[in-house]
Length: 392
Image 1 (cartoon, rainbow, N blue to C red):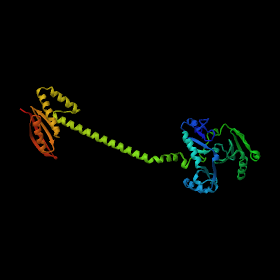
Image 2 (cartoon, rainbow, N blue to C red):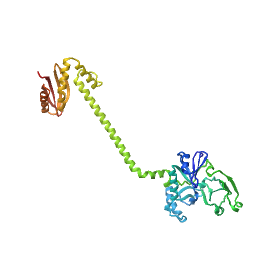
Image 3 (cartoon, rainbow, N blue to C red):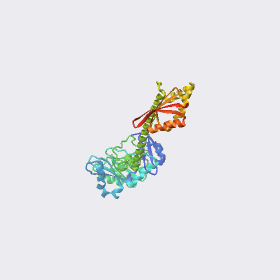
Image 4 (cartoon, one colour):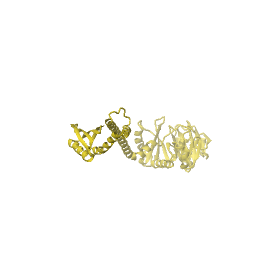
């Protein structure tokens, strides 16, 4: 598609085609032009070998295991050091295969990575040449000649030997092309006397990247597959960190869960405390009807008692002396009533001895007269009622 960035990774000056404009320069200068968009990258065709292989039907994973050994006798390098990319089958059922050294693939991808350029696909640059049925497309790039002989076929050779390569290829063809389309970008192409055997048409072009902006490369072999597909490459980079990331995610989940549980527990405690405060207020002031904020209401009632004359003052003074001793004894106050100078306190203690000791402390340390009005064991505790008066 015309809005799809193309990048030509050929030295000495890489170039890219973005939004109908050609840019040249080092990869580091081209990266901002691409603006983070994944580019369709074209690599030097002379670095790879393109072949057709008779292959039985099967899944791509199974073919990738079988193809290297089917081509092993035709390759000079060990198959373990080579990367095999599969294309489509032709009309005879033969499978297109591109073979390139893994070291070259790693070098290309590392250059892209250092420059911060993302790639969508990797193709041989001979596929930048337009193709038409019964026609071969030819161009030269520096000292290299590129020839596209089919939708997913072609070869690269030395420019000096182009005419001989073409002659040999034409002899092997059962149906040779009816013409040769020469693309002069911009250097002339010398074919010797080959032009007398096959009609030749020459056309000039600004740059190979600018040819056929609407070209569809879906049928062209993509080198970015297997270990080098963008998805697999990210997976390989991510794989060493998966355990650490999983543990971190587990720790975060547990931490958030504990925080949530602690928050629920604290809310329950606050709710219980509010209920206890309200109950104490109701027990202290049985005439209270509506309790909205027991702390504030308690403060206001106590202030009114302070201002209510001698009896109110007596109550505050008496309560102020006995309350610390009751708290110190660990007693749980259930209700407090004051009438005619007498303070009635219903409370709960651990045992009868604790109730008796509290009575003695009140008389010895608060200087009051305390009398146990009742005591009964209930739910593992002793509930009692103390009547406290000022000493005569």
